[in-house]
Length: 157
Image 1 (cartoon, rainbow, N blue to C red):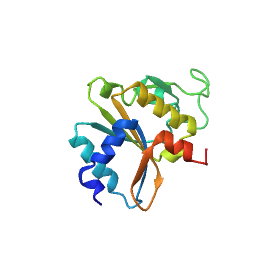
Image 2 (image 1 turned 30 degrees about the horizontal axis):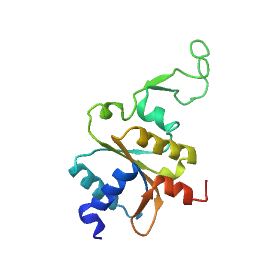
Image 3 (image 1 turned 60 degrees about the horizontal axis):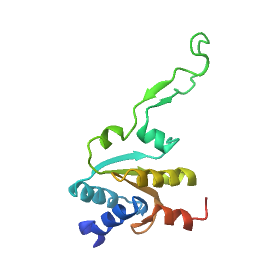
């Protein structure tokens, strides 16, 4: 387990590529060690699930509307059957204003489509402050690679 002692190799590859695809052991623990090493190196960290993301750029950086789930029979008067749109604050906008580098750790990244993963890569290229790590499933040992390399090697897309 020497690669987890300092996390230096992981951090340099994350800084070089901006967006990493990672496979972690299912028993857990290695990702929290890496997050602690990144925090110690001066990064702000945010963990969230990739489920229900929608458009990644809008979800992470722009004010967007979300409709509540349909709960059966409702009054058709004011908002019809659609429900009232609720404005949701972007996940990362206020963190990017602090001028500190941010690492967004996305759990369950295997549910994202190829275009969503590519838009995450583009987002990291446009904003040098933002680094993204996407968990793409489990493995026996901790492995990672650039997201663009992972997408080009993956046959499931």
